[in-house]
Length: 466
Image (cartoon, rainbow, N blue to C red):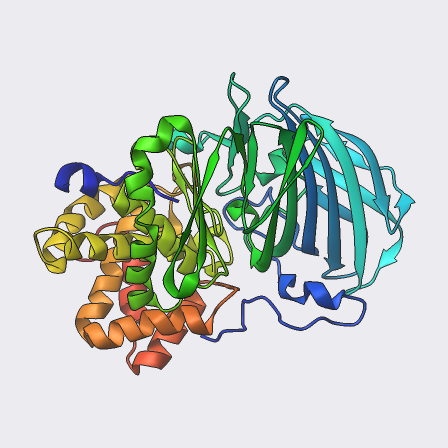
């Protein structure tokens, strides 16, 4: 996620320990094997997510009525039992009404409590066996009041405007406000999404654009994710977008979805191929089959294969920041929200490197400016590895980890550092990682012990340089 950093305002392990499995087990649909995860309970936001289930695939058929600002949905989930279970518990917004639920084609009677949906099973589902759950629902979605200090995170999930447009922002959680979901980053899944809207409107989601079909006065837009997606990286937005096409490195298909009021930003948006080429030189090949940008929201978000930006965030360095997340956060993400620094530290670092490459001042000069802001951020929100929960994604998880990465670079040199960052993504693609796996991997690949340095930058209540 992109937060407007103070710097900008004032200055301009192993690959399998925590990852997604690649092979199906008996009783699990082979075509969804890439959606297999090892879910865990979150230490920061334990109310969201269910570690006893692993959703392999979501098939979402969604309809949006702009005049009523209402949603209809059919969600077909393929759910693997992590351990023997007698019920399937999902996160699902209380504002949405359930019309019908089936498990393996047979009607089930769900229970609701707050934003939890519980679906009883007729017989115990054994570990590693899967079940197909279909949930039909409708209603007027309501965003979740999160209690977060960040203004753009005070309300999470799907929100709509008086003109009938809608968009969803859901880091660290909030996908549950528009579809039934295991809303935790450790449970990544494959997706097929279809959004039906009136003619003149467009529905944009995460993944690769699969075209549109028209029927009467309605049009359906289709999206597909063949790489696993964490729920906070999903996207739902409806507006009167116009689509523009482009090609990135090696012919990578890119789509831009732009409203009339955002056409002034097209020169910036059309720099995505250039920004992708720059990132590939630093981090290796782009890890997904397509890329894109949708101009919406009042924030910035690295939604998978289709970054979400709006307003003042439509600037080259912000686009670069969100694209960097596709390597650091989307392809290799945090297993729990304890390690959100794994996302933001890397993205911040590459944003600063891009700025240093395209403006006066060396990388060291820019990092020296950042060090001053890092001290204040750490005092305000806590250390990056143990931040105050109400200050999720504050500046501290951006700045301190970025300085930490620069200290590693200083010790091993530029060539080894960028080889290290490229290898981290390529060797851990489509997995969730944590501090322990990162530290062990860095130590192994450098032949040096960085444990003390990493722990100091992530845990110290004051700057390690004080």
